[in-house]
Length: 297
Image 1: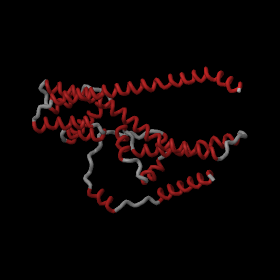
Image 2 (image 1 turned 90 degrees about the vertical axis):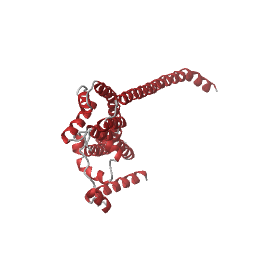
Image 3 (image 1 turned 30 degrees about the vertical axis):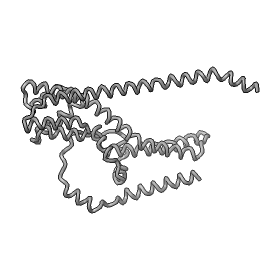
Image 4 (image 1 turned 60 degrees about the horizontal axis):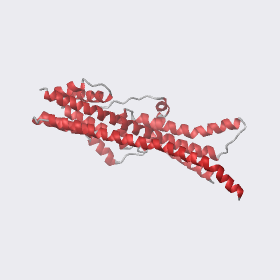
């Protein structure tokens, strides 16, 4: 019964995916009108890179997955942070899911050729489990990579804030302070800030507008706050050196707090193997006595 249900569900999902791919649903009229009247969004600052063998093999499945509404808005922002195109991500999800679904069947065929067999239930269950894991694994990896990049960006941003307010204290203007400070730093975070400032210069817009856009794309509120403070200095002549110094200090304090929390969590995780070893040692000591008592009865 379980085998029949699993085969029927797999056949139904396959036929439904094929139908969605061949006859994609038409968008609603309101969606079409909203798209036609929507103002063009500015070009994204974050660059994307399309690489990987899994992305090439899974390209035919990108359109059906997009028709299903994948990925979500939150995951799309995470992909923008990591610099991976949405099509590449969906193609990898499809490739890994299909690989996980087919792998147990291939193993079963090899075992059958060798004179062994695991039955039909185990390959089906194992294929479904591996397919689900392969489909979800790229999402988990993307979220983890995006979180690490945001953490590194905040570390670099605190140093950038110090450089900006020191340059402002030396008598430089707002634009020259932003541009000169970013030229000193190295790494991924400073490269993104440099791209934003270069884009502002080429498009003849204000630097703080591009910094605010970069903060929204990265989902880093501290950068958006920096853009708001700098805009006050650029448009109204406000003195922002003290504010920038306070923001840099608060950002470093927040980073230290997060680092202490991660260190404490790592310490607690280190105690778990010791407890397991201790429990195993107790079981090793108590086992002979327990066996002797039970056999004596």
